[in-house]
Length: 149
Image (cartoon, rainbow, N blue to C red; front, side, top):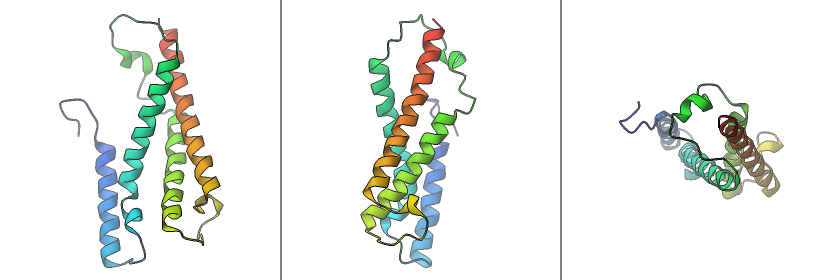
């Protein structure tokens, strides 16, 4: 699944497959879904990637990380361990995205509980939680980079 550039596109393929399944369901079985709901998996993938990049740029702009000699940073950061802050940020962003679609659709009733109500307060809370978890994730990486110098 890796191209020559080293970019892993597995997440994009999975989100695209889920969006295709949702498209087939919308066209054949479930006619009450909006097109926002069908495109939600791809929107979550792109939105989380953009949020991750923006938070990383802001953190690394203000973090005082000293210059290091050229070397392989992958050994320092240990990318194969699961980071709880990153997973929490993804989960918060998924709830944020679902609430955003419910808010756009204007559905007044919720078949789930208050987390999926589509209200503005819930949007703000889960958007902020996602950004805070990503900031915590990048501060952990920043500490690892400072300690390696």
